[in-house]
Image 1 (cartoon, rainbow, N blue to C red):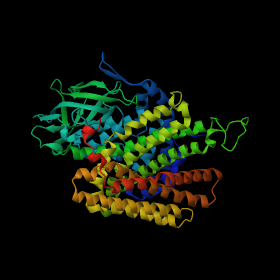
Image 2 (image 1 turned 30 degrees about the horizontal axis):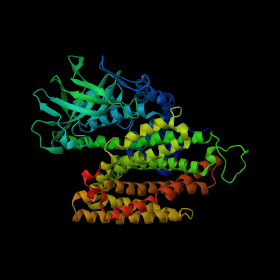
Image 3 (image 1 turned 180 degrees about the vertical axis):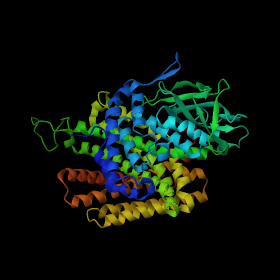
Image 4 (image 1 turned 120 degrees about the vertical axis):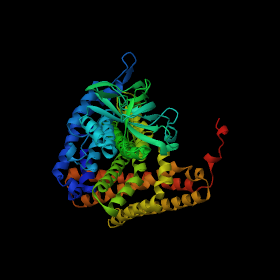
Length: 601
């Protein structure tokens, strides 16, 4: 039977064969786990997805969330609360946390694969609990004991929703320009005033409380991002044992292109001068704290993109195996019956494109999650190296699945032809759903500038050297397998071209103003991403080729052949794009910089 939205076999391949997750059980934090426990959690995630998420994915698109101006409530699909409850009761919201706070101390690698399954089933619903997970983690890491004791249990139980409230109408992504204010009082809280826009999960009926992790500037704070502080600002606060309004009101929600039940709210704070916020950590350190949640959210956005691309792939694969149309070009007999469209080479090309992008993205996200685990359990240089690699790869992990995932879903829609453009099939929904992810948590341009302007330069380029070393290690392993040697050589040449391009840009940075150096940062991010995902595909291919050489069962052999087909597609169709990117990045023609704004008419 064809998969509906995701492959647990592929998840097991990533966990056990590629990343060998059992090695993590050598560390004290994860010593209670074994292969059976890992598999049980994957099965539990799939079962939850089958029962509570996937059944409503189409309904949540057709019966979208809306703001009821009469009641002031945000109405959502009733299946949303059921899904959140199921995920909370399964322990998924607090699963990464310590046993002492009812967490499961589960490896981040394992949880990321579980999250992928849930996002693939229904990202509209699954996003809510994982947003709460990130907000709770922020309080856990930097909040006072009192904040931890009061908020964490309710957030982990799913009774209270968590959000991150950053963006403002006049500032957009430029947090330097936020104007929300926080005035200290003598009673241990701050008076908050301002507004926030595009707040995911910001308000909806049926949830007991919403806890906004909010950025604001304390009166008299330094200008720019150095003056930003972080506050816990709940929708309701407790007074004398009763909940009262905390003067956080919803002005409305945005009518989004996709993700119709994943609410994006416009919130007003302190219109009645009675909005109270409790500071997290120290004043003027808010952005530093928030980056923890933002980076987690970037990995989550990559997983969400991969999940949607996965659902789209399996939907289009199913269609291609059922829809007869046309004949092979060599068959001139008009009376011959039509063949299934999967028999056509160009349809297989589009399916391979989807599979290669989606499974390459999942491996990249697993790699980042593995580094997050090592950062948690290692010490000294090993911990520092894991941190650097995670920092370097986060822009890629967020942006590649979003940008290339959109291309993948578009290809899936094309597989269905005219049917793909109708709402009789889910591809048009998946196309709308995935498109936002290249904007969430920083646009692709922001991540391109982050990678080129900051991450490449970390510790005098140490992160890049570590990255190159990891790629070279995999290349050398592949060189030992005759079937993979040509691909290893291809990646080696492309990686050297990237290094040459990076050096050119670094030299440009020393001679020119930053606008020149960063003008095509998005293209460099694409270049870097193609190298990174090729590295991940070569890792997978080494395992798949070795397994295939060992004469596995026919079912396993089919799986490994499918892996190698997608691997070869990526190296033959996607990796060569780096040549054109290098040409553009090395060019002295500054088209975008030299074009005057007035000339764009």
